[in-house]
Amino acid sequence: MTDTVRLNLQFNGKTLVFDRLYTHVNIATMTKDGPAYGAVKDGVIGVTDGRLAFVGRMADLPQNHSASETINKHGQWVFPGFIDCHTHLVYSGNRAAEFEMRLKGSSYKEIAENGGGIISTVKATRTASEDELATAAAKRLCHMASGGVTTAEIKSGYGLTLNDELKMLRAAKKAGQMCDISVTTTLLAAHAVPPEFAGRADDYVTHICCDIIPETISQGCATAVDAFCETIAFTPKQISRVFDAAKKHGLAIKLHADQLSDLGGGGLAAKYGALSADHLEYASEASVQAMAKSGTVAVLLPGAFYVLGETQKPPVDLMRKHGVDIALATDSNPGSSPVSSIQLMLHMGCTLFDLTPEEALAGITRNAAKALGLGDRGTLEVGKRADMVFFDIEQPAELAYWVGGVVPSDIVRAPSSLTQS
Ligand code: DI6
Ligand code: FE
Image (cartoon, rainbow, N blue to C red; front, side, top):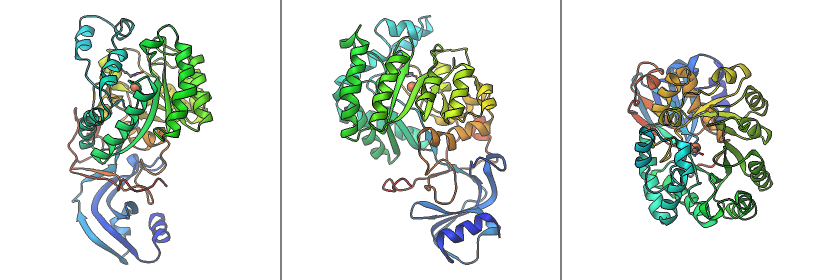
């Protein structure tokens, strides 16, 4: 008897009782050690009460089981539901005009410094109602979900007032309900200095620490805080104040770090025990080493790199050398990454950042779960949520190979009522 089967017998007593059995399926469990992709060929998955109750080979499924429903998958591949761990899906308007300006030679930084960029989306977002924002975000989120995403993180950051930030976070949750997708919310009030605080960034940081963070907590609107550490945004010193306040209130920490220049953002995130530091094109070896030590995930965002025509790649070799877990995400936003396909990020992670298809897939499953602090998903193992995406493909690498992705043959989502284990 294999270990898998023993585990399952323990999990479920002597007779295995399933709500549903998926038979003759090739399983990319995406567990870390073992065969490539954690693959189990000609496998079977049993689901009970929205969780995985059996994951193993057909040959190891004990005779002594019953299932209300059995579905033969005829050799399709199944993966953990994809997790997009960095998005800005809630906003109003779009920035196609800036895209045209960039094509004519203006840089992202120049546009931001001249009142465009993030601030132009802030203006549009402030005038939109919560329902309008939720509806617009749901359109984008449902599109994302159709490619196999079952969990998405959504940030605020285009409101930049107490009420507008909370409005965005509530809209994010509503969008999740509208698409039946698991959504985590992150407060990104430190995204840009709002016009009314122009020249007074420190005062805005005080407002974030003393008013916006406490109110976000008391209204239960977010579980993490994020900030933009960059010359066009906030200094490491200002961000340290935001993180100190966030820690005091029990928020998890994430950081937009070292995207356009090296301000030591990766190291700063590590110092605060951040779940993730994101972008990291300009991260130094010292930052990478610090992240390895603190277990901070490197979230790479090839969509923004591609759209902005960047040439400096994130130091993937250093991340491998020091053992930093790598995740991949869309960074879906109206400025630097108008992207809604997580599978396109698999392709770009490989072609632009030299990841292997297996590393890329770990980046939208196991490591993306870690970047969100979610221990109940990201791999296909007994006890995890039954979030699964099936494809009629011959090998897992195809998901990164086909430009623009593969349409899932089936998507299974655990009920949204399922509590985190
Ligand atoms: N980095 C990003 O990738 C997004 N925010 C950030 O700090 C871009 C946001 C935007 O341009 O609207
Ligand atoms: Fe971002």
